[in-house]
Image: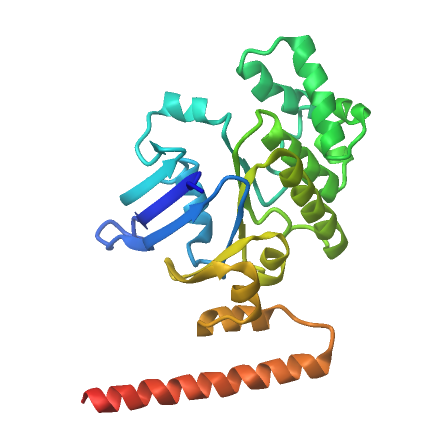
Length: 287
């Protein structure tokens, strides 16, 4: 199956602090692909560059070099007008469900805006809003309420409904559950999976939490200091990782069984020592 989105050798850097400071390289030749209807989990710690990839795909961060191709069309240097037209196919769900919604506008107004912008009449837009609220399991009366009247999980459902308004083919999910409690996280993740099954939408799911990524993803890519260090099927990468950094991320997700957690850490330390000994032996042989 042909890829819906392809990122090839993507490089992004930002100005350093101070007038003469060198630029800071954030992405160092990142390549990845997402098929239609697939979820690619992109996982890494804070500062690894994972959010920058999503922002570059959405046109919110300038690309230094490399290519971003969506359904055969280059995105890395499209005009602003073309980028607006692409909004029908490419949407985003941000981390904070409150700040991503206009607090002074009703949910109905927020959901109607992209529909009206695409030329729908007011009556048809209102009907579509009702359908969107139903899809994310919110009552039709929610359209008359303001964001502050909802819980965090409900606000994130509104944000998901907004992302679905134009029937996108790919949604960038930027830490969409990290601001929610564990029970609400599960509800929102189940909703995203349900929507994908119903619509065939693809997700780039950005997170620092390997356990969350494992739950929703078909494939996983692990990013460290602007480089992809491991990628593959979710079950393999999250269950039997090969790279030490991925193993460390796995340890960062606690398990309820203290004995199992202790055994897992001991196995990781033994593997790390063995890896270090091998690297030292190879270095000595080269000298």
